[in-house]
Structure formats: C-alpha cells, structure tokens
Amino acid sequence: MKNNGCTRREFAAAIPLLAVGVASLARGQSAPAAQAVKWSSGTDLPRLKVPKNAADCHHHIYDARFPADPTTHLRPGDALVSDYRMLQKRIGTARNVIVQPSTYGVDNRLLVESLKTFGLQTTRGIAVVNSSVTDAELKRLHEAGVRGIRFNMAQGGGTTWDMVAPLAKRFADIGWHIQMNSPTDALLANKALLSQLPCPIVFDHLARIPITTGAKDPAFAFVVELMQKQKAWVKLSGAYILSKDGPPKYGDTSAIAKAFVKAAPERLVWGSDWPHPTAPAEKPNDALLLDLLAEWAPNKAIRNRILVDNPAKLYQFS
Image (cartoon, rainbow, N blue to C red; front, side, top):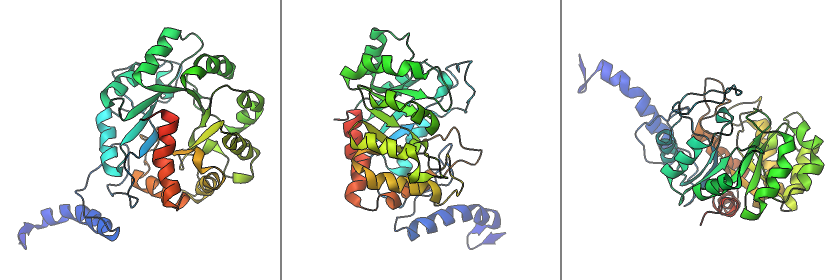
C-alpha cells in the first residue's frame, strides 16, 4: 500500500534517518546522511566545529591479522584504519595519534603498519617496548612516526615500573615522552621517580583521578605541579572510564577535566579513546565526547590550543 509515494515499510525505515536530520538541524548543521561508525554509538555530528589541523591524540587500532600477546586479557574485535577514518569524517579531526594497545604487548608491527597507511604528515604513534629493545629498533620506530613509549600499569602489557627510568634515559635526547596509564595510588608511590625523569610525562585519561576526591585528590595536585613545571601533560580523554554519572554530561569526570583546564590549559591535549576498548557493550557517542570539550574549555582560543597547538608541540607535527 502506498502512502504519499512510498510504502508504509519504506516510511517506517526512513524514520531513524529523519530523526538524525532533525537533530542536526537543531544543532545548526545541514542534515547529513546517517553514518554509523564502528565501535561508536549514534550517527549525529558534534555541535563543536573543530579548527583546521585538530588532533585526536588517543586512539587504538586492532587487527586480527596480528596475534595478541598471550599475557594480555583485553581482546577487542577489529578496529581498522578504514574504520577510524570514518570517525574522523564524523567528528572533523585531521591529525591523530595511534596508541599501541596492551593487547599486542611489545609487538609494534601493527602500529608501524598503521602509521605508514595514515602517513607522517597527519599521524604519530606511541609504542610499547621493554628493556630488551635495541637502539636500532628505537631508531626504526622514530622514523616510522613514534614519539613516545606507553606504560600501561592499569591493563598490563609487558612494562613495569622498574623499566621507566632506564628507558627514559635512552630516548630523552630524541624528543620522546613517557605516556602513563596508571592508578593514582601507584603514581603517588612513584612520585620521586616521576619527578626526576629526563623527559616529559603524558598522563592518560584525566590522569585517572578518582571521582570521589576529584581536584582535592593528592594525585591531582602532584600532576598539576608537574604540568606547571613543564614536565607533564594530561590527555582530556576517557571521560566515561571512571564516571558514575554517565552520559550525556559525565558530570563527575567533567569536573576534573574543568579543573585541569583551569590549572594548566597549555599542557592539555584531547583524545577520543576510540574504539573504547574498556567500555561496556554500549559504546560511547563520540560526537557527544567531543562536545564535552566545549563545556570543559568554553574559551575558543584555549580550546583551539588544546586541539591544535598543544598536539603540534608535543607530537612534533609540522
């Protein structure tokens, strides 16, 4: 049966697409074609229009062609370069930083291949190595676009605290940094070590500051002290990881993000954390996660610094 030129079934199928268009128009955007992105909820565009050369400074690539490290337990499905490019199209970012996930341990082959596919004009990488890495391998990683080493003390993945200082000494001269994903009790237990490193530290996911104490937590004070001494950076990423409030505002973790913006906006970068490997089955809405940045940093100049200038400095984008 026809209804104004279409069948009832066709009309019903069009309702979700119409909803996307109405939501986009309400945001002042032209209605896009509905476009799902793998590992991301929703199809809406962000309200925030990012500046030219905006960078997503934290995402991962997964590919079953590469074997998982048998000592790791986080095993997401494929999240390929082509999938991530769909996310870039949706949120508007142009530069990106691929972070070696714990899944592959110190096997950086997928990271290097992905960097080559994206190209060094727009993409940098963070590798994972241990004490057995050779100088030749560090050089090869640098030429591939790697600019730091990740220590994942939250998920594991082949690195330990006793490797931090020796490795930092080996690559400090080439402009790399230590990227740290660690519970705050371990950060505080290693304050002396972290304070004396010869290279910068980048703290993942709002430094994993506990929501129960927020900006009053001693770990927050320690991280801010390092930031203000030009020794550390923080990624405004993973608002959902520790949040109990949840979407759309993630009020508890948003309060921590705002406190970091107030304390040291010149030492912040933003990241999507796509494909959200530690999130439950219902993945976050990446448009919503980007829009949070407009609330955390309402000043456009500061926000653009977080999206463009700070990443260019930290990751050596031209």
